[in-house]
Length: 313
Image (cartoon, rainbow, N blue to C red; front, side, top):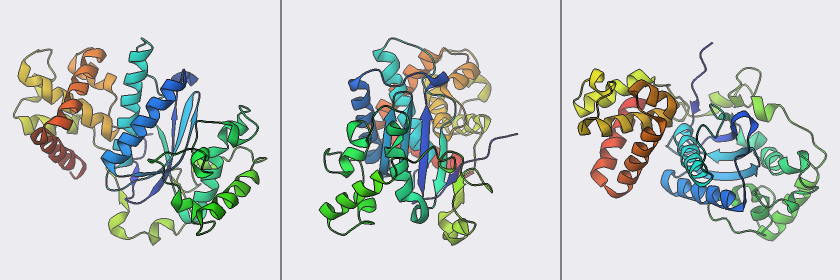
């Protein structure tokens, strides 16, 4: 059965789970956690989303993300790609770090956000790593209680649900979390609702959203992305997919790999196989393209135009 396309709701809140491939560790030491923090901060600045809660477990990652106009797929794929590249470079390893497609559930924040923040921040307690969330340094809990300063983590939206004064709100938040210490695994935060596993909400949730803001994001195929990129660059699809090393084909291949990864249409390995390139070669070309996007405004405009043409088709 083909997988369902992701729901893209600007302003929507999602529970995101990224797991290590085959259950392997995705953090080896404190520097790895700090690197992820840096990438999370970069992503918030670049894409304009908010992070309302998170927990970095040894072999998986939970995020509570409220997207803006940029799709969740683009946000998470960029984070996963950049972190995996760092981890593989640092520990001299190759291959996939994360397990397949990331899990994402759109949640009704009015009904579930507070419970979801508590659930995510209590993950280390349920796993037996600590007895209270205060003993775990790699989650958003420390920032919520005022023990850490994480500018990229949005805490005020949740804290205002408890009290208008921050000090009082933090005290109530701590009591709320303590009330959940005995809670067990909650399946709905991992699999969504019965009607649609992509959504955790009542039957009226989608209907309550303004039509212009509830968009079923199409899932462009790799073939569609290749065709659009080749058309924009004026090169033949057969040329890009051939084993030629012509200079004029390097950028289109890298653009295809970047956009396919962002859209969830294909992994870097799958694109490399189509283009008959090595994964390391493809990864290097995408990294060079991303560097160019930060320093060359014309290139950035060209790629952004391609993104829109692909997702709006």
